Image (cartoon, one colour):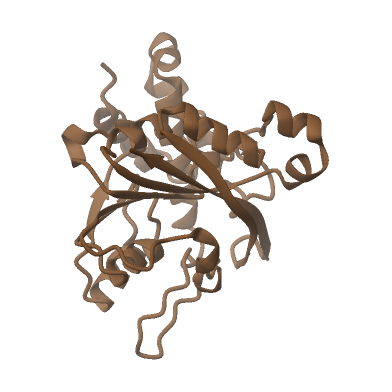
Length: 287
């Protein structure tokens, strides 16, 4: 079985010995860290690890910007790339999550995790693959009890995290080489409850080409495409809205329905440009 932690240690040692490496060189480092056969047997997991490290290593060399705009309630508001506060109405979250155990998959700086706590959830677990100092700072400033869990979504299972009544996954699927596997794992931690997924979509294919809507086409993009949020984030997939709903349903949910679309706008200082990302919200049920 592939040992992810051992591979990460090897990668970190390699980074220390190659301090001037580029993001692209990090993505190709498997050539010296793994044998060819081992790489291809574990390609999905290895590529995701390398992509995340390439982003994080790059961010250490530039002025890091908050991903989320978060209001600490004392007049202090973070300068995030994205401000989700005026968009909450599109997500369809329950007004009250009292009595619920909530999982936030891909929490980033924690905006949604803290929002679920604000809505009265009994327990909120914020999950991501890398440690965010911004999340920890926000948690401290908000005196939050949200639990921080560093875990790859490919390792998510009820044996490791238990079961949840409500799960949210925000803008994660495009950055996963195997999004269907991630959805299957998310389904595994819901015995009975609700799942809300926010996903970036290909607006033109979704709105203007009925044939593509009918066939639920997935558009494939090359990793490390120019013009992504910081120039290094790997975006594998830009699906149509129907595709997102169908994939969630096929992952084992009893029902998956599109709730609507909206456009998320922001500004990245690293990329020095505006970010525009059309989204679909899909709500799924496990009865």
